[in-house]
Length: 175
Image (cartoon, rainbow, N blue to C red; front, side, top):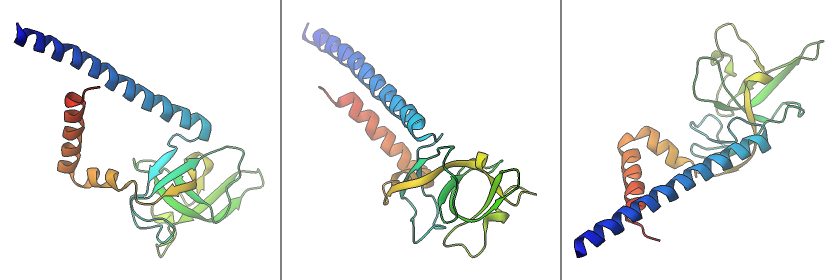
């Protein structure tokens, strides 16, 4: 009888833990969607993945972004943009702005630590970025917090170890 009671306790505990885990995941998603609405950015938080923006930002820095349509893009501002055909957004500084008579604004970017502008990174035939390419503009950062993300991408075994430990914690942890 004692072993059957223990198994019932484990079953009840696992259901409770699965429910708690589901609540944590759904809460995180709601917070992320809320940040998207408040900031106007499809990705309100990004990690700097390269050293191209040193000394302003280092690899692993966590950036907080906004992307309000009414705010004009200015020279010197740090923007995060996507290039068609590339999955990973790029964090670079606005170098030049080209405003057409129609009011359309195009701009050129460059990494602070790069020798040349980003025209070589843009898709073939593209010489300027447009506002539609911008994911967000850097408004703040936390140094090196995003290094865990980089470690998980660079070292898949580390990622699996972290996921295993988190899963183990969820299964073993009792309230």
